[in-house]
Image 1: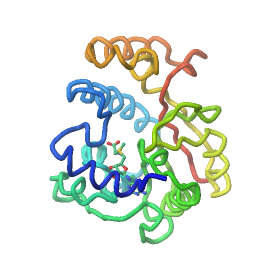
Image 2 (image 1 turned 120 degrees about the vertical axis):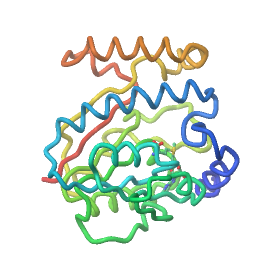
Image 3 (image 1 turned 180 degrees about the horizontal axis):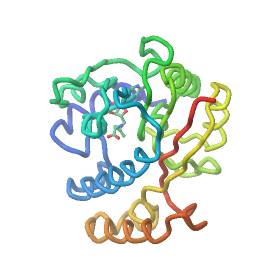
Image 4 (image 1 turned 90 degrees about the vertical axis):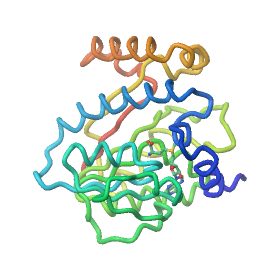
Length: 240
Ligand SMILES: C[S@@+](CC[C@H](N)C(=O)[O-])C[C@H]1O[C@@H](n2cnc3c(N)ncnc32)[C@H](O)[C@@H]1O
């Protein structure tokens, strides 16, 4: 099995100044920019649905280069950013963001320390099943109210994968969340066609066009059943 931690430490060093250090290495910087742009726009709509205090705290678990640590900071959170890569953490320039260099499973802190524990596109990079569960358990332990995840949430385990990926199914994630006293309250699609297996190879050459198509589809399909055809989702889990 690939050493996933070493993989990420090396990748952050190799792609130090690029969004590709945390986005897709197959995409140009412009294409990665648009993938994050729509994700942030969708995330803002999700945050607006939540009941949070004026002085709110968030842990960005697996923060990478802090693209969402900064986003959460801009949206009024006192943010702590955690990652296994010090190179990634060093790219966060906002002084008031606290930084922890640690695997998620080993982050120390009081139970329920944060109003929100956020982890976008990290958990399926943890290859060992035991560590994956310990990471999710620790995320839940540290959250006082919400856990917010972003990934694909497959119904069945994908047959084709890469050495640095180990996607668990939506029901596997749900079971761990439920066992930790959390239940899903929001499932919000973030991408429709730009990141699908069949369009992925084309969309990288027309990123702005695919951004506009996805945005149009997502806005049009709001509250319709067809929302489930999104490729990626933000899911919010609330403590019971
Ligand atoms: C695909 S990137 C996503 C980064 C960030 N969440 C974002 O959305 O831009 C995955 C990140 O998870 C980090 N990571 C991988 N395994 C981790 C672990 N066990 N604990 C903490 N961070 C981890 C990697 O170093 C990398 O920065």
